[in-house]
Image (cartoon, rainbow, N blue to C red):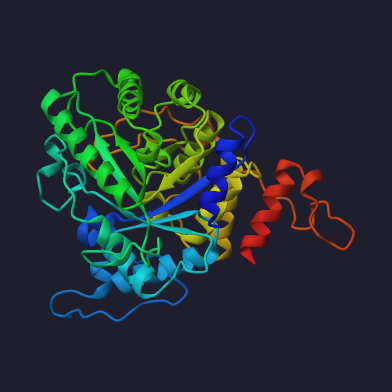
Length: 411
């Protein structure tokens, strides 16, 4: 069984007590950003650089700066090999390369998924003006191409060589005609998905243009629109879980308590600081979320594997977000990696854009911990152990847990 299915089953069977938490890595940004989607070459997999052609009289590869697709695929392979996430979200093309042709997920606990639609509010081409217009529904990928890489799948066996999970996104604008078109497109997708036994999760963006709704009231509008939409969908056509903007504890608890069978997750938004990502996961989980999907936050991390490991440790309540930022910087130092920002700056909460554009949709106050000087780490031997030398997590203090995980990751 894939870890996603096991965790969804546990969450639904034990809605008040389940400790399961689902983490998804979104490597589907090539359906939004184009060249920039693959991220900067400051971080590559252990395999290193892949060949690329650059004319020295025009520019060098270092001047260009971005990874090519083979380098990007190597990182996905490495993250899947690590085994700490539950879902790997990709574009239909990347899904074909890794899931269908390579069989990367065949013996992995990780579930492959593909972006099933690309509405116009993710069309983030350089110099384009699409993001300044209200989102319109659109789909590049077809369900058949995601499931089996061709126009018509053979459905007799019930299994597919490709992904059988997709991300479908909607953007409510508070505009009658636009929202009606968006929901009609969603209706058509749901009917096709049900006929083709295709699972999906539903991403709900905030309005990408002025909706006339005050920012502090958007959480109420989005919650009501989600629940109103889902009320017309029976179990066979409902999403496996939601992926929404975190509007704060009040609105997260409001939607999570509404229906115990509804699994709610948060979307990560723009890159921001390390503390932005770690605190978002911690706070969303505390107030009812059971899924977090990070794209740009992981893809822009100085060391993606270490970043993911700390996300998992936070999700399992092994370490606090503040401890995790300190430990993550310790790992970077141990690996000789220059951080994107100094520790003090990386401990700040910043205004995050939850859209593919630049305007933030949620304002977050600065983190008072940003002014705190980093505490020295205790020596690596300063944690309790069981007979035989294994670490005794039950007896560890917060500082001892931090020292243990930092030392382990440095190794």
